[in-house]
Length: 139
Image (tube, rainbow, N blue to C red; front, side, top):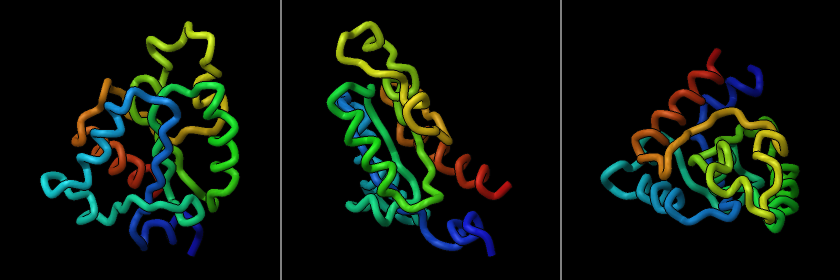
């Protein structure tokens, strides 16, 4: 059994990283844990340690202060670890791109496996994105 198959035989553990966002995406991610959406019934669990994560869920535009921390966290994550960019700021830096404190887009810093656009993306879109990630891993 390969690494990809081992990931699918257990729950997806997700570690959330906020890279300097306006908190709208963070609120939508927390909404996923409420009884209305309850992603834990699908086996998706938000965890507090990067060392146990299967998926990195990143929100916010990558600024200079968060760049070093993100690289360190990414190296600490067990491999294979999938990276999901949530929100328009993370995907393309949208309105923050001309700012002096912005670094390169996220996909130029670490490899991104899935993009979930929106400002902020709705919980249904995030769930749909995670389902697409699972299907991508299955192939």
